[in-house]
Length: 425
Image (cartoon, rainbow, N blue to C red; front, side):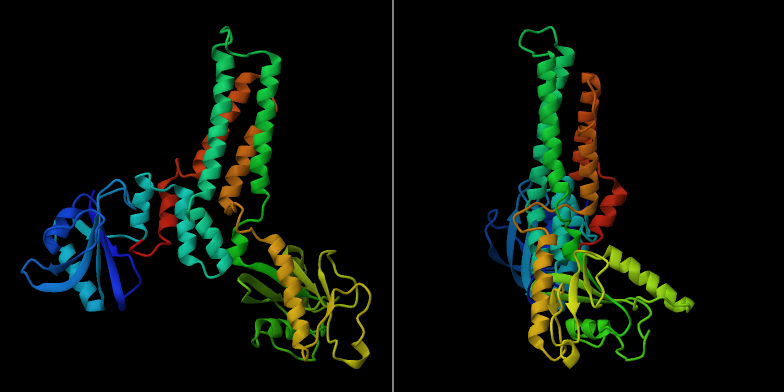
């Protein structure tokens, strides 16, 4: 296997840049560049020189013997000055050494997975951590990167393995005195299988982690000229939608990403809901109805009852004299001239958002992990009085859960994942 190298810190220029080298030739390359190496895991100042003896930089050198390293291999870090020319010179010297090459995106983390230092859920958590833009995204990604998802799945796998062992014992050693093989023993195992399925199902049914990254979809609906576009612009704090007294100005949905109090939202303005013979306007109405049906949260700006019972029913344009009183059934009144009313609306949105998002102290699964765990639940819940069939479904469930951890991951799926990483990760 080739030894790889890359900058694993931020993109230069910077005060310090960390050049990481990992693989079987890492120590030999470091010694050729920096001379005698310091003791493992002790930083020492060294002059870095090329093959002609020219000084490239003075840097801190740290060596990490494998397999107890980030990649599971021998690993060296050079903490250099972060100028572009310095980094280019160090990388040029490394690339000229036999057996070394520049790392591909995500290759350090991929080697960590290959060498058993992390599993697939931890790698995916690290990828999400690198892309986190809000505090809630960071917390969820850190939970996965630190192994909480992995621990839960491994715990389920261990439980399935123990149940499988008991079923297999009933099948293979039914004549042994110390193996319970009667109906009561079988029913006890089935009861434990159902309890485990319920435990996994509770995590599957929890809010998905994608909501943290993609944002909660908040759709503004109502008839034409009800103030939808004005409200979108106020909440988005920019003129994203055209505001006009002319009916039907908004004919298609307009999305505005917003982050507020650490929560990501996608605010959507829609065409006014109206019966129309205009074919273009009718398409807009159909899309508006679809957006309202698929929304996480609906803000309804009509005087008629909202299409969903869980909608935030807003009394809009409350600054107008004829609309000063809050009618019965409305959630709250909003006026573009009253910042406090907008703050109250954000407060209501945040209260509802928190209930829809994963909490920092709970396990949040990604969409494909939820599908896999749901399939494991289906395998566990299969009803049969035949111990042989139950044993087979337990084997299926364990194989599915192993897939969550990447124990049967395909090369194509791994390429898609690790392509999200920067070169030095």
